Length: 92
Image (cartoon, rainbow, N blue to C red; front, side, top):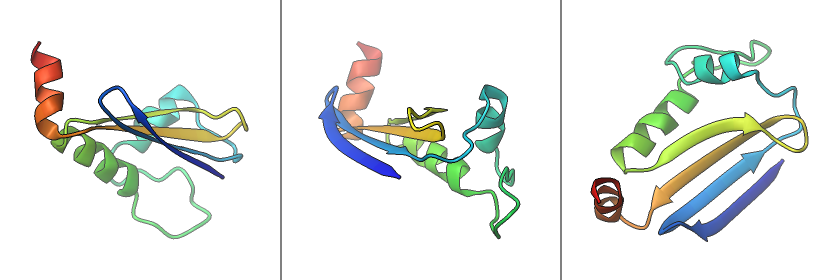
């Protein structure tokens, strides 16, 4: 697993990559829905990514899911330096 945090685009970017089986585009979209679990080998509620996406919307950030260079999932989170700066960038 790789974790990268860096300053970017008037905010901060956090990227988490793993070397698991990854997800198709359709699975990535489904994984963001509340209660949907793609990995049934471990216990869970299927809320994690949905909560992250809700928090990103609340704070003016964004979450994207993609394929990692290692072959697994890459979850990329961007948060603005402040929610106010995100609103200014979007409006102007």
